[in-house]
Image (cartoon, rainbow, N blue to C red; front, side, top):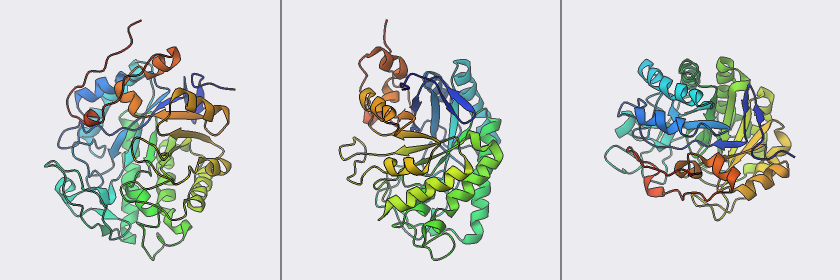
Length: 355
């Protein structure tokens, strides 16, 4: 039976351990969404992870609705990502780019236009802007004839990720962002080929996944979902048939791996009473499955032992513990993550183990 510290093949990549770094928004880029030098050090410090998943990277200006979040649509941004990937590789690590579009979670004060979504809805929480929180705006529904251009933006971003030196890409289809807004029925109120039935609601994700896989290869493409509970007001009344259908679809594309963020009732960040969907998804997706949310060493190993998960992704523990893999292997105590500094543009020192 494999342990967290055993290697695993994730498509074209071989991870030396099964401790994956989850995507973590840090807001450390410039006002124009260009990565900065502090991000080089940050990612290189965590290169001992089996695989690093970058913070969400905007595929376009329209899709980058969070202030100081990085993008990857311009040549300047691609050039600024190269030192990050080079530093991770120099330390022996692997890193994939998470490609995302904020949809209705964005704000015109950041993107310069009305945010878009599957339907004319608004998030129930304030939007982040350079001037602080602002009331959410009602999104403009994307017209069907705009969607090919959106899919092309994902493919362009994937091509740029390869040019920047990333080892693969992850499609951000979780946490109430644009693709999630199309997937789930409380935010997708459309009556066309992208709304209504499950097959229609997952059409955008399928088109994006096939386009991205066509650019970087299916064996370097992954997807992240958040199938249980609400995030940014996005939810579904019957998640099991939806997400098992999504799992079936992604299995036909033969993506490298599927990651699920599954909060529990007592989760530190966004707990829910909606049952975990991974036991059902596991029956439909036979590829590599990575689970996430509030894991410790014991719980992580238990889900690997049971066959529910092939690897576990850790988010907040990696913020305060760049050497998380070594700490877990040594049974050493972990520094607690500080939520108030998890999104901060300056340096926040985190001590490492002295052995």
